[in-house]
Structures are given as structure tokens and as C-alpha cells.
Length: 409
Image (cartoon, rainbow, N blue to C red; front, top):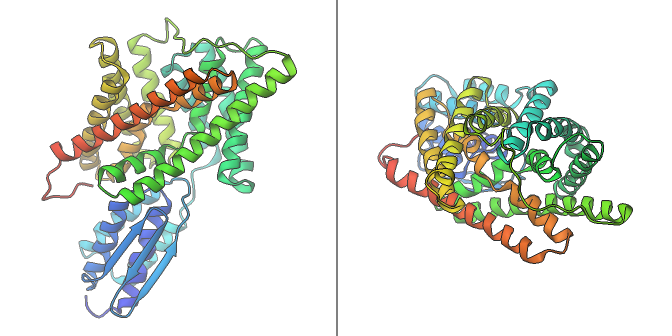
């Protein structure tokens, strides 16, 4: 394979790494894929340095640095590039054929709008139930998510910066839920808003940041987590504005008394079904290949089952329950990735998503808007503790169940 020039090989490896990084892959996968491609074509001694928003490639007569802004996610692209790198290692592609295949992956069509709307609607409806909403709250979140997703796809994604888009999204989604409740459509505003706001939660950035930290890629992990925190804060600002705006015109602040749970939807079977539906639906929004929708939903459902068991039957707090649930999700992600021959990222991101403390964003924002600062601080600290528990779960799974001599998918 030594007949290929260093520049051609490293350009191909860099382009593959760029596709992975901008579509939601973790740092270790980007580095491994670039090294696998370069090594097969005779450039194994080359060095790659990957950050969360940049790739530096150096060779004997080649150097390249690319800035790659943190964007959304298309895990179908990640899966295709991952498979391409393995096919290259197996000797199935010449350099020219690999370049053509990479170009075809780059030009893959995104999922159709109707599928994205279904994912948003049923994802938010499912998570509304998970977080305690009634079936009527679920229906209201479904409609609000459809309207909010229209704004996300047609306006914010095209014309607004990331921070402003999330502020506007938080404002619009909360006002829609307040309006629906005023019209009698929905039982509890808090549950409706939490379910709707899940659409804006940066699940990919948050999970990859946690995973990078667990993999000791601290600089990249902290950068991604900082990006996720910025989006969380932007959503919270939008939610605050919505409640303050309502209070200004109505003359009084809406009074909410913390999380409430519906007696029917809080039953174990309904919760498990909602987790399956919600996670499978968000797999659509994350760009997961269609053949993995259901299996990704199963991983999320399993994690939520563990969380429920520990909170309801073992009398454990959110920290311990999140830790054990994250450990199980991380372990199952490894098993499913091997079984279905796809990147583990697909299952880990989807499976961890029900555990992300998205509800804490809403309650912190509401308590700040209603001048209940002690409760806002308490809600924020709980979210931080849950985040730490998830990181520990991923680290424990990686060290206990991983074979260090054999890299997983």
C-alpha cells in the first residue's frame, strides 16, 4: 500500500475524521478511525491530534489544521464512516474507491422532515410521561413539540446562533405550554414544559463530553460539556423569560409546587413503555440508522428500568440510581454494538438520554424566575450530582467490562 502519497492518505484520513467529529463521534473514535485509515495505506507513523472542535494532522511532508465547529448530530454518518474504516482495513477499497465512498457518505441525505417531526412529537410525549406527566400532559407536550420543532427546523437552525436559538426555543416552548394549560389542554404546566424542553436538550454534546472525560480526554470533554452547559443555560433563560413575561401581563407569577406524578402514568409498565417509545423517537432526532431505532430504545428502556427499581424498590436516591442505570446502559451499549456491528456511540447516547437531568433545567429556571433562589440552587446541585453519577457509571463500565487488549465498536 506504499504507492500512495502521504498527502493523499492523510487528506482522506483527515476528511473522515472531520465527518465523524462534526456529526457526533467521540474523540477516541475519531483518532482510532484516522489511524486505521492512514495505517492501512502505509502512513502508520503519522500523528493526529483531535480536539472537540479541531483536527491537527502532521506527517513527514504534510501538515494540516482544521477548525470544526460543534454542530448537531447525524449518527448514521458516524456509523457509515466507522464501517468504511473497517472495510478499508479489510482491504476492500483502494484509496480512490475509499475517497469516492467517503464523498457519497458526505452527501447522504438527511432524514425527511416528516420523520423528524414524528421523532420530536413522540419523543417529547414519552419523556413527559417519564417525568410524571399525565396522558393529557403527554398530548399537550406532543403538540407543543411539533410546533417547537417547526421553529427549530425552519428558523433557529438556519438564521440564529446556537445560544439565541435555545433562548428563543425555551421561550416559545414554555409559552405554548402555558397557553395550552390556560385553554384547558394539559393538567400540569411543569410536566408539560419539561416534556417539551427535552427537544432542546443537547444530548449528544452532553454524553460525548461525559464519555471523553471518562476516556481521560479532559480538554475535549470539558469543551463539550461547556458547550452543553451553555445550551442548558440558554434554555433556562428562555424559560425564565416566558414565566416573567406571563407574570408581567397577568399580574402574578404562576405557582408551581415542584414535580408531580400522575397515578396512572407512574405505574411501572407505563413508565417502561414510555421510555422505550421516547428513546426510540429521539434516536430519530440523533440521526441513528433506522435499523437501530428499536434496539436503541431497548437500551434506554433498560436504563430507565434500573433507575426505577433503585428509586422505588431499593430506596436509593437519584445519585445511586443514576450511577447504576448509567453502568447498565454503558455495558449494554457495548453488547449491542458488537451484536449489531455498529459504533457503541449510537447506543450510549440514546441510552443515557433518559438519565440526563433535563428536568433540573426547567425547575432551576422556574425557581429563579419566582425568586426561590434556595430551591434553584438545590435543583442545580442535584443536576450536578446526577451528572457525576453518570460519569462514574460510564467509567466503571469501561474499566470493569472492557477488554483492554481489544477495542470495542
